[in-house]
Length: 92
Image 1 (cartoon, one colour):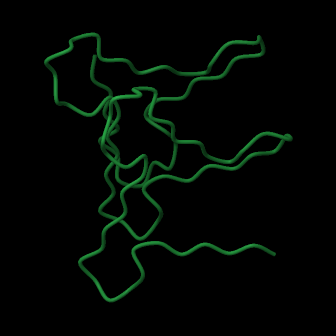
Image 2 (cartoon, rainbow, N blue to C red):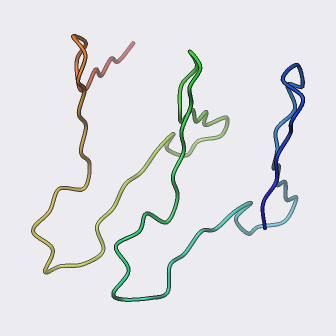
């Protein structure tokens, strides 16, 4: 399934999911143990953020969890090839 908006002046999302029930609005899963592909990839050639999340309720804005007790890798990896910080955190 592929969705594309070919009109450069259109500012509507190509895909939108909404739910009024108790389930997830979206779930991306790879069910192949030998796959090294990302379950979700996002790219932008513009000036906006690639991923932007806003928590309007009492939950976390983001959570990353490794659920494999034998894993020796980090739960979060940040890298930049520019002059800015790879990670910037601020509490107000």
